[in-house]
Structure formats: C-alpha cells, structure tokens
Image (cartoon, rainbow, N blue to C red; front, side):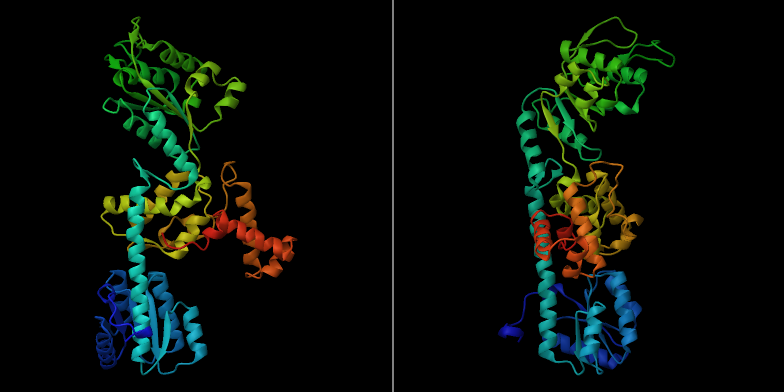
Length: 473
C-alpha cells in the first residue's frame, strides 16, 4: 500500500527504475523488492551502464545501492546531472545520517534511504516519481492540444499583442487591398504576408516574393518589371517580372524602405495606374496585383527626412500591421519552443520532449534581439545536436552557456524595454546578495516593502524575474 492507503498505482508501466549496485546479489534482491511494489526494474554493476541506459531513454530513475563513499555518490550525481538533469536518483546506504542525506539532496538526489530499505517508503517515493512523470506527460498532451488551438496558419501565440495581429489579419485578408507590415527583423513579417495571401480571395493565384534590399536598382527593376531581350548586357532572353508573374495574385516587397526614390516612383505608378513597362520595352502592360510591403524602418521618419516618398507611404500604409518583437510577447516563448520542437522533431527524426529547467531559465532570460527567427534557429540547432530526450544547457549556442545570453544587445534600441532593464538590475543585485532581500533593498536604496512590490509586479507582468523560475514547456 502507498501513502494514504492507495492501492497499486496506474503509473508503473511508464516508469522503469534501474538498480546500480556493484554486488549482483544485492542488486537482485532490490530488483525483487521493486517487483513486489509493482515496477519492473533493470540492474547493472557499473555506473557507465547506468548512464548508458539513461542516455538511451531506457530508464528515468536510478537507485544507487551499496557501500560507496559520499564522494563516489556525489561524483555519480554530478555525472548524471551533466548527462540528463531530468533523471531521478535515489541513494541507498548503510551509513545513513541526516547530514549525508541533506548533502546528497543538495547534489541533486531525489531521496536518500538507509539500508535495509523500508518497502513502504520506497513504494511511496517511486509512486511519487511515477505520478510526476505521468503529470508531465499529460501536460505535454495538453500543450499539444493548446498548440493546435493557438496556431494561426503556421504562427503561434497567446499574448494579447499577437492575438490582435491575428484578428486584424483575418479581417483585412478578405479584402483585395495593399498592406504595409511593420516590425523588427526576424519578427515574422514574411510569415504574416504569406498568411494574408493564403486566406485572401486570390489564394489560388500566385504569390511572388522579393527582398528589395538584395538588389541594386537596375537589377530590382528587372526583377519586378521584367525585361526584353537585349535591353542590357547579359539580357539574352525576354523575361517576365514578378508583377506579371503574380498578375491576379499578390506581390510581397520585403524591406521596401531600402529602395531608392527613383524606384519608389515606379512602384507608385504600379499602385496608382495598375500598369508596368518591361525594361527595354515601350509597351505599357496592365496588371492587377495586391502589394504587401514590409519594413523594419520607421518610414514616417524617413518621409520627414526625405528618404521615402510621402505619396507612396500613404498609398501603402492605409492598412498597416505592426508585428511585435519577441521581447513584447515573452509569454509566447514556451509555446513557440513547443511549436519548433514539433517541427524539428519531424524534420530531424528526433523525439525531443522539451528543455531542462536550467536551459529554460537561460532561454527566458535572453533579450532575443533576433526575435522569433533567432529562437527558431537556436531550437533547430539544439534539436539537431542533442542526444537526450531534453535539450540541456550544453546543447544551446556558446553564448547561452557562458551567461552572455541575458545581456541586452544595446545596438538594437528595441532589445529590452525599460522595465525589463530595471528588473534585470534587481535580479543581479539579488544574486549578489545571495537572495537576501533585506540586504538587496539596502544596496538598491529602496525599502523592503518597495522591493517586495517590485518582485510582485515582475511576476504579474511576466518579466525576467518570473521567467527565471518558469516551469517546463
């Protein structure tokens, strides 16, 4: 019977303990005891084999039995934590003391039991671990279901800022009009443009994409409007431009703020007159395309400073969508991680379940100057290289492993909000004071009440101090 008089739990099939004891007879006795409790156990007489079983996902609980020194036990615990911080370790020793038990737990042990083993206590501990794993499994299932509900044509989010974007996109996509998408680099402007086309009345027509910053003026003109054979050196054949190619559909002009004033004048003609001329041709051709433009620049300021045509700006910005930076939607990071894991598990034929707690902490503290694209690249690389069921700190890029990920990239003025910088400073002072809030308040020059209010506010607003203690995604 477990604690509270419970009968045999239903979690045992999901939990396979491994017994590590250098004495095969002792190991066999412990395996038999575990079988009586209701769990099937493996056994080994070497730490390397125990680590191998964990590495290959064959067990998530290790019972370390035998007369090992405290140093040996702590060394094994450190090796397990480096291999997979999610593995639960139970130490069993004849030399049990309260101090040795506390020291083992500080090194990462789940429990420390005296020998001979108390069957009731062992069952209760294994039942609790099995229940914990079962709870995590059910949480992952709920997250998967939630992901489906919160996915908007390949974009996921639950924060108010991104949900507003989804709602506005649904409304304007029904109408055949030009749109300007504004947002920082890597925030998902092209993805939104694809969605606008996908759910528009012309979804069955072509979508053409052009990065305006990738071409000099002469090549951009040829790319957009097409050219006649012999129009310039190297023009060996007549080619359609993107406007003709996508006639009846949509043309996406990324980084439109990088175009020259001369090119802007030609684009304005397309919008106003619905006509183009191929390079080297006198013929005017009628077209009907929807233009979706995107920029990470402040076009209103560029208009004031003479770098962008005012008439083109007003033509494009009559309908404008602003994509928030990832720093403005920190609540979405766990959901995005789950989404990218699902994507890259399928791509790399992996079965990564999530991130360890310490990897999550570093991920959530990062300022993400590269926004969603940077997060996607980090998860892609980690998913590709990890050998375990969970992405750990050593699977992340080097800057995350050396504590530099939490530093803001101040070359990007949108890297951190002012309140986030303040909370980051409070967190730094708390660490310096080893969590002593009285001392931290003195260093910060504020009252203890003000500090508590600050910490409570950080939790309410999901700022980095809350993120540091976030649970698994």
